[in-house]
Image (cartoon, rainbow, N blue to C red; front, side, top):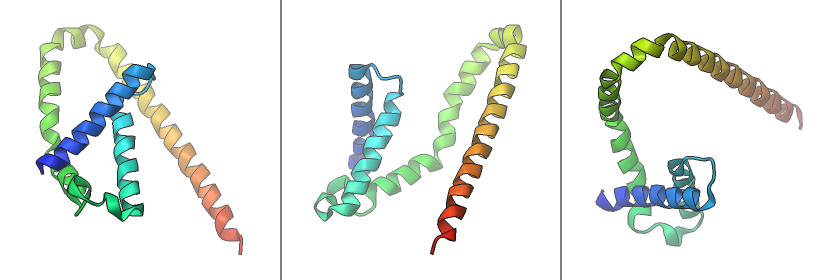
Length: 128
């Protein structure tokens, strides 16, 4: 499990280094996640890579264990919110308005994506 967790963290570290070196406007952990996905896809395509942490569903089981305990990561965020209650009281209406607008935009983008994907899939089924 330590090797699996190390692989996940090394991918995140590489992603952070790449983003900072290139000055890309993307979070480092996102690039690290893409690197990990590419490694897992390469493992499935090339059996020689299925050793160590990449073999025997090690990364997958470690990821499942991390996801099972994901709620623990919200404790520091909750403490941070409690520490900034005065800021929330001062700018709470603006924050709520921004949250409402962002939720609406996210829902509209999700609907547009679903409609586009549904349209593409229905075109693909019509062909013999």
